[in-house]
Length: 196
Image (cartoon, rainbow, N blue to C red; front, side):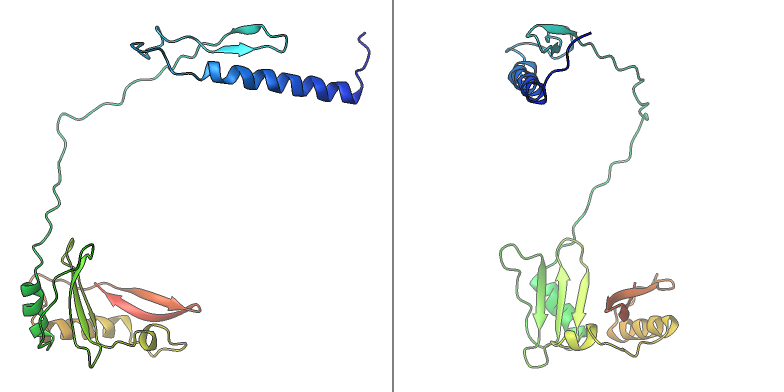
């Protein structure tokens, strides 16, 4: 029976093993030599270091699996971005009652904007999607962050949105029933609805 090593000796032995493992790590993780093909044949097999400085042996790994089947054909989609110009947004702005001209987007901006400085109304059209945002006031906090807002029912919200778009001449002819969702909350209370 081997005598029990003192605690201090055990710590030294563990530290020595860790140091040896750390010294062997760069060699085990080194890149293959130039021209070597990493196919398992030309690459050195990993060697597990032992505490005495030798090696325990070589480790070999094998992955036994099938390649996934690929279809004969695949669909390819192309995103077609709309051609959003300042002239187009100016024309759209007329339907909302704007009399000014839309400003072309500045470098890095993703939208074209037309607005009214006095009322704070603004209309934004996004370059990538053609999506439209219309703000009827500059004080959005007074609309979006109200503690106890008086909101319409989902059916009434859809009717309001439909009437608004019809009045502006923007309701698509092929539009079906709209979808009403919660647009946001404040303090756990629904503050506004979104109709899509």
